[in-house]
Length: 550
Image 1 (tube, rainbow, N blue to C red):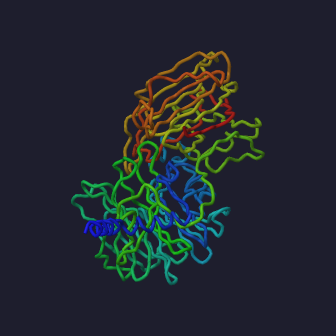
Image 2: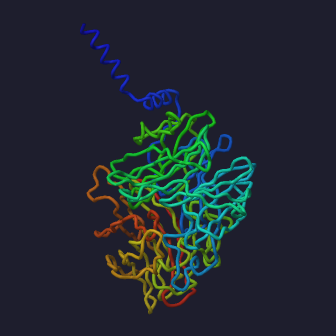
Image 3: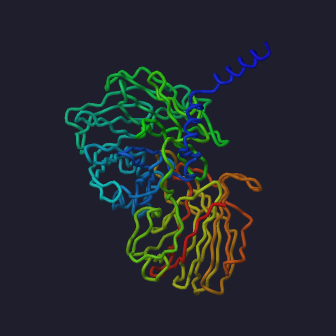
């Protein structure tokens, strides 16, 4: 009898193990690749993913940074490398040139839709500072230039679906609509009228349905959205119909839960099927100051519904039935050793660069940033060169040569977001130089969908001021996004330090409390800057940029 009871208990234990867990265990045993969430631990928001043969391509949001809309490539859905950008700059106007108090902070390119049809790659997204929708296309997604078309109407968080010679577009925020475009994506199809597909409930939702991803799979048309029900984390919900125009009167939560000890849910991302027939989803998770991080989850089809994670609960790890291959290349070190005046793809400028004011060839092995405009502060300065920060903890270090700087010039490195930290060199009217570190917490300048004003410079907390006797100084920012064992600080802290010999470092006691501020809407980056407050013509040289996880 005792043996019988044990057998029953064992059977019950097996039955209590979900089918997802069993499937994941089988894949792991097959020697496939495991994706540990978050995938790259850096800001890769609003992903859309497609597969062409055995290669996967992902596009992401980079807002106001230039070039914009990075194209990333993977062979295993885990390792992603930037291979191209969709555009260099959206417009040559006051907004992107940081002129007349204008800027694109919190705006620019949002939530792109990526598709491949008849040998052509299409990328569609809204630019909400322009109140327009852009449709780019190319035959060479990794190396080619993109042809642009402009639709003089903003389609919020839109998603394309090509079918039988037609091109449909689903978009919206709270109310989700559909319209038909011309088959080549160059505009709205004449005679096509928008139709309301469904409306997210108004009561009890902090964020109503948006971030659409539109598919025709099997017998159903699916619209996958992100929303935020009251009392729950951000949630992935899907709506379906057997007719493309609806009614979409069936819907289900397909992913809802938290991972990584955070209260933020995983949502807003695509479905993708591998060449082996398996299904996965990549959804982003808000992760504080470092940004919105991509996560990967398995997908099991249950009664025609794509159920993600472990029966809608996100997993810390996901086993992918593909061989591990490829590399991560979304951030990198740089010794600035170039033969041509070009930069690695991991670099993006803050707004549109003035290409006459930077060089990696004038001084071999150095990045030179020249001052060409008189501005008030680093957030109104052009040609700030940025890279994504990486978690859970990392450092960014440079060696700055200030010998070419003029009175009124400011150069150094910045922890770049609305609340920011700078440490660098200031040149006085008499030509003397001082090392200055500041923590700046500007007044909140807006929020979701609002045009921020120029960054005011109060209150400024100066924490370092040291006279310089030479021209070279080593600068470092240490980031703690998620504290690890032994850390004595809380999350989302940035610390500044400096050295005059590269060996003995002094770290300021005061730190920057970082946050994901909606007026900028991007994760923190390290920026290299040089600008003038009095006269143009000076320059600052950076010997290297080294970012490391510790």
